[in-house]
Length: 187
Image (cartoon, rainbow, N blue to C red; front, side):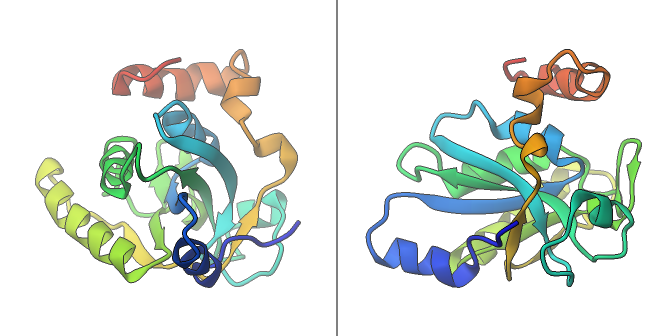
């Protein structure tokens, strides 16, 4: 498993005139988050993975123990001329409950925490502003962590495009499809 897209490589990509950007979000199970963002115009690629912890090259099984410090996250490669970072943030707040610490639904543990990992100072400022704005939508305080991305580790291949490839699976039918329906997104 190779680590990809540190803050430095993202900044270098932008400085070189590349027309794509990345956003890295955690909001519970990465299968759910991948499905939520998958059909948004301007999304080029979504990679499910791990970030925010201290174990190099973690496996899914290691992250599931809650002892690596990593969260399940998605890294979105997108075209900022078609979808803005602020639009991605708006969907981030709607797609999960950012007021529950280390939990989303039945998924419990630090690996399921609400997390925004930023690649630039501009992303950090936008995330903090969006968090303040989103606070008005929730009765409880938002516990979402916002911090710079240090390193992202892609998850194993069977986690990539999970919902798209496994729509009939019980978890997809019981958890992901209702979430997409609630958000008014394609199922």
